[in-house]
Amino acid sequence: MPISRNASLDAIVIGSGLNGLSAAITLARAGRSVRVYEAEATIGGSARSLSLTRPGFTHDWGATVHALALASPFFKMLPLEKYGVHWVHAPLPFAHPLDDGSAAVVSRSIAETVESFCSRDARAYRSLIAPLVAQADDLMEALLAPIGCNHPLLMARFGIRAIQPLQRFVQRVFTSEAARALFAGAAAHSMLSLHQVATTGYALGLVISAHAYGWPVARGGTQQFTNALVAHLQSLGGEVIANTKINSLRELPDSRAVLCDVTPNELLRLSGDDMPRRYVRRVGAFRQGAGVFKMDWALNAPVPWRAAACMNAGTIHVGGSLTCIAQSENEVTEGRHPAQPFVLAVQASVYDATRAPNGQHTFWAYCHVPNGSMVNMQERMEQQIERFAPGFRDCVIASSVLTPQALERGNANLRGGDISGGAGDLRQIVARPVFARDPYATAMDGVYLCSSSTPPGVGVHGMCGFHAAQSALAKTLR
Image 1 (cartoon, rainbow, N blue to C red):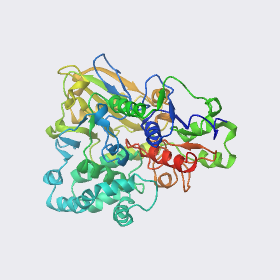
Image 2 (image 1 turned 45 degrees about the vertical axis):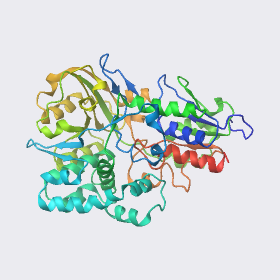
Image 3 (image 1 turned 45 degrees about the horizontal axis):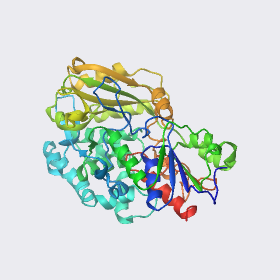
Image 4 (image 1 turned 30 degrees about the vertical axis):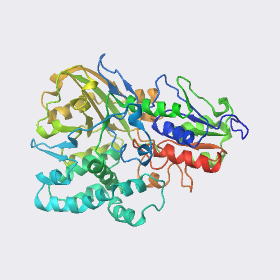
């Protein structure tokens, strides 16, 4: 086994995703020696930028918009600007086009957001969102912590709404299609049926973050964010070794602790027969989430949205009404491929000109599909975009397709195209990956899990890595 209390190296981190790098930085800040191994030639896991279409166009392999980055208590501690991270905000965090040519939008200002709502919905929106935005720092600290009792009264007020199924909640609270669709688009980030409990929580968290912090991108691509984390880690004495795939924990050099930024099934593969059978059975019950079919385009002009407000938004939720989005997400949950999929799109080059040659643009989008899907969704996705942006296809210079299989080949954590590290339903929010007082510690002494398969789950916040490192510091690296 690689674990040795007398090893000269304190910790090894497997995987250089944002959680792996966050774990490594947390350990290095505590004065521990740490080395990170990455299987791919480029550091970052899904937080990489590549030229996927044509030279001169910068596309992000995974997330482009970082809706929780500025809300993250961990990232707030780091001198990211010192290492070249420049956050860029669109005038509007997100927009939601509708079939009548209008769009619901979320502005940083609550007052501006409700301008297009009827008076009843405007009052309901302010009553629901404003008190939570006023306490956003405390709320995000609680939401991004392991399941516990941080700010219990605030969490109780949030939770009584968050626990509800989104479709039922918005039909009761709002009367207009615009307000209902706006929340449906935000809730669809969960990759769950909108009939499922706790889907309202996803929508509320993202809407609150949009008002309180914005949904920024890193100028020049997400790789700039990753590079800054690596530079900071190296300044603290940490090492990062790329292009080195770890196939077994036994092949690692001696260290006092190992932190794995991997999915539970990959953890079991790495540990082999060394992991106790009872833990293997428990982790084996952890379920993957839906997959995504991702596309990137190089464009000769901005996307010609029918609703002018969409031109000012960084993220566009393409799916139409609450009913349409709910149907699409239900079909994916049932293992089917929607004829009109919900499409989550980002037009970063509209407000970050460094991503494309002068006068040209990048465009990024994915739709949800059953895990491991083999169906080509390009035509359906482009039809959906054309539905709200007639003439979109005329702007396309080149495109790139990343199927669920291609995503998994490029990052083993994206099993079957699952970008969430496992289904994010209520059961797996509470038991992620197992129900335990310390979900980061495994049944192997000194081995920890630090991926988005642990609390608080998916999102660009680094908190899974931070909390796992704190557990290792308390238990193994004292």
